[in-house]
Image 1 (cartoon, rainbow over the protein chains, first blue to last red):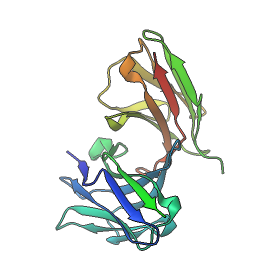
Image 2 (cartoon, chains in turn brown, green; image 1 turned 135 degrees about the horizontal axis):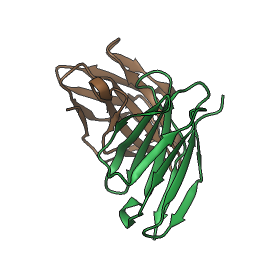
Image 3 (cartoon, chains in turn orange, red; image 1 turned 135 degrees about the vertical axis):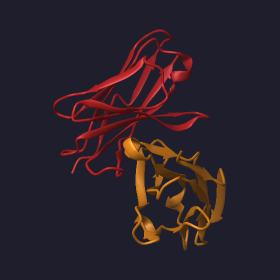
Image 4 (cartoon, rainbow over the protein chains, first blue to last red; image 1 turned 90 degrees about the vertical axis):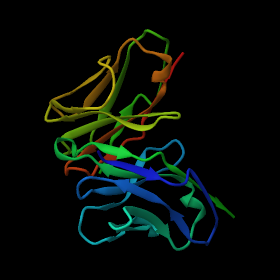
Length: 115
Length: 111
């Protein structure tokens, strides 16, 4: 079965410093992986997706993630945090076979950005 | 291009009542998905509709049901509401498998 584990429930950084949000996945097959962001009282926005092409995936707003099969990881990074990055971030894996359209969400990481 | 829209924004019901939530997908998208985001339980897949048919269902009781209309909009119905049904219900649509675009959600409160 597909699953993702987000290793930190809360991360706090200072504005201008790097961001690292950690995600490990479990999958019997080559997975499709995503990062979504949810700002307070808003819906989910797709940041980036990995679908077995380049292992380093660039997304919106300066975020990127690297797929590492040997470590079963898909960590999200950004070189310099901005106040507007404060939100909850979800690592997501798609289902398999007849359930490829089913998204399986991690428990989320709440990112706080201090001035 | 308009995004996924959901109505109502907020819905307050009492135990035992029925709730109806609505979703309009992005124009051209044929698949609609429903997710529940409940406190302490995270985001869970509820239902997937495509071309008017239910394609997949999450681990929810039968009192959670829905349908998709010919214009691809969708309705989620929750019967016999329980307190634990209080949650944010998110709708998403897609044209390409796996790339889902989410609406702002409907906040359901069951008293």
